[in-house]
Length: 227
Image (cartoon, rainbow, N blue to C red; front, side):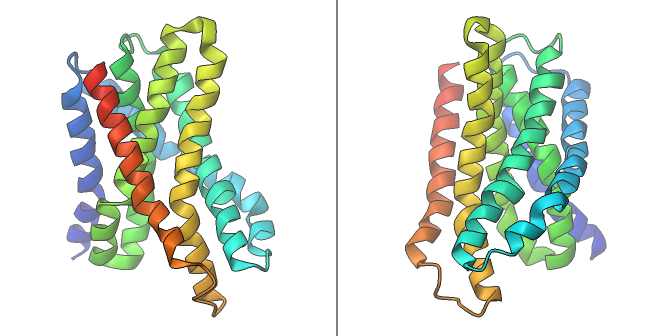
């Protein structure tokens, strides 16, 4: 059972990474790709350290909806995307093999899936196969799409140095925005449930979850088709 749980947590990331790798006309060396993935795994450590500093302040907010939104952006989206961004911008973008725009998407996905895989292992170890199934079609693809958009902007910064600062800023802000929008209704609903106020978060807000994934999915698909 433990092996099944482990595989159910890891396989979604592996499948998605292989899919993006095969979209690359000039595929990246697997060793470098997995090294980027590994740095993505490592990026979970500073996230935990940073969030631990101020998470108590977020948890002290009385209104569950506001607490969920703050948690989504400041305890999840911003720190997670920031440290993944460092992997893509400071490690992957400097690689000799990063020599075309599509590479940014592939390396961005690799870094994000490294983070997502460890995160998924922790969630699945606690929630089991059902959690693994849900996250396989929601959170893990979400992380891959955040990484794809991030990598696109980092690639633009690399190949359009005259506007590098603008591209890099968007490379952090765009994934953070989508990540926060995805997490906000879920964490707000969870906070309301914990406070015994399950109706405090209106149902329509939950539409942000699939809508966010769909927008990113179409955007990334379009990007790949035009590269």
